[in-house]
Length: 94
Image 1 (tube, one colour):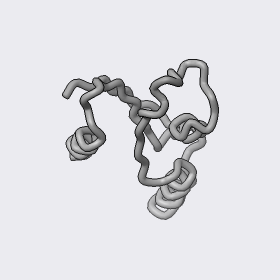
Image 2 (spheres, rainbow, N blue to C red; image 1 turned 90 degrees about the vertical axis):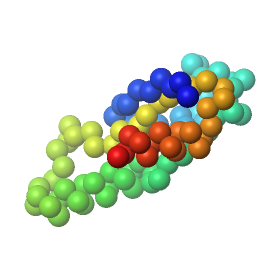
Image 3 (cartoon, rainbow, N blue to C red; image 1 turned 45 degrees about the vertical axis):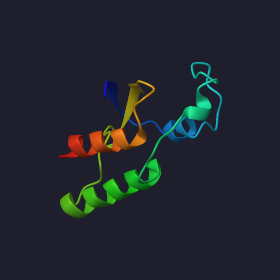
């Protein structure tokens, strides 16, 4: 399995991009039907959970410039499956 992976701070429009709710010039429309993704929580829900956790543990608000949620953008070969990516995520998490 060969994968190129880039981790970035999530942007508020990341879900719009991932769900293809907006047209982007740099997205290949011919490959869009093959696009797959998964997420555990909505970005705003995850940020709210992190903010509440930070307040609970430290008594302070999360800093405005904090970027606690990251996303991975991957370039993969055609034969890489979503199952392969789930396996990779478990290895990264460990």
